[in-house]
Image: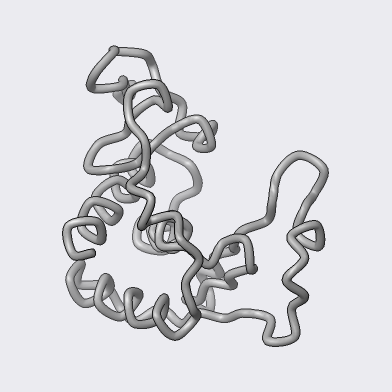
Length: 141
């Protein structure tokens, strides 16, 4: 297994610490790259499902269904676990993604789709897939 390194500064990167990384074409450290702000904007479920359909088709993947809590309170604290926000959960068996309100973003969608497309947790293959998905979406915004 190879070790990921930031393409700019050479810092070793650990995909399990994905909150400290930026996935955009390649895997970067937070010091060398930032996400395009449009990837971080909150979006409607219908828009995110449209993106999901387009991404699945472009990457030759079976469809993925998005789920959400229609009665959610727009209170982010509901999704706070004491250390981080719960943004989304991929269900491999049902091939679906549950998006929670703090995660109604394109970058979160790409993160979860990478899990479904690779069948892996926070591995190098997952990280590279996440980076490819994010770059594909960004190029089409």
